[in-house]
Image (cartoon, rainbow, N blue to C red; front, side, top):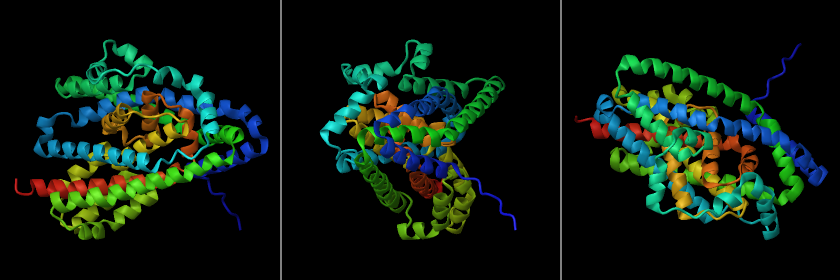
Length: 412
């Protein structure tokens, strides 16, 4: 009997890369840093597509939902609900990370060595020693004076502003004129996503090289913090999923949480096993049908939510950014953490349909607040299980939104 070899999935390859990297680091010690350039190439591939990806996908996402008059009252309420819950999710993530401090526990010598090791490469010293602008100046600086310079320098807040501005403008000009541009942008977006696919194929080798260098320099004890990080993310997701959504369903949707969670068991399991909000859509709609939520609500809220609403991913951004900052001994000011909230909320529009959206968004956040991207090597190894957990939270958030919007609109 002939057996066909099963092709390993990407997350399995990344996990193997993580384990091999740990082994290489332990065996060869500091000599393992010789393969770090492979990891640097992977990081650069991810970094180079951040600006075009955010700009194009956000413009397309805004153009598709930006016309509030056309979308109507239900669209406006749905968008407002999504934005509020996203902000709450990020805030929960930041609170959990600040209270649990998953990145702490390293001895001071190791933390200083980590900081110095990546200070010049990531320009941490330059970025973080700059004088913090006032709140008014911060708001002024969001509006770019030179859009080409904003794109070239990767100033993500300005890039997001440009994308939102032009995406909204596309809904205001004649349809026959905007359609051709939207078709072009859609093709560009597809090309960028293919680059993401290529970059992620290199992820196992990049993780192997980066983690080998980290373990070779600092030893196994640095990986103990990885468990604390994973528990912080999963704990935050559980708190948000079963508290915020329960409150929303109970008080805004007028439905008992017990009935809600009993009715959505299938989409929760499906989302967890597939890690795909889009693939979960039919299962979610069927579950809402059985709960008495009419299709005129679920068929509007769920597809929109799978495009722009990522509560679980937003929470993950907050915990991950704080964790990596703590690993390098970099204090995050209140302003830095508010920047995380603002950027992750704005970037959620249009980014959810992108493969590895969580990693791409995290790169964007880390660059904006001056945290070394090398910290990604630590969290990529557990990315798969966290992706399953946060996708479940994303799906539950969209299902809860359907219940809430139905209650708000049923008498109108």
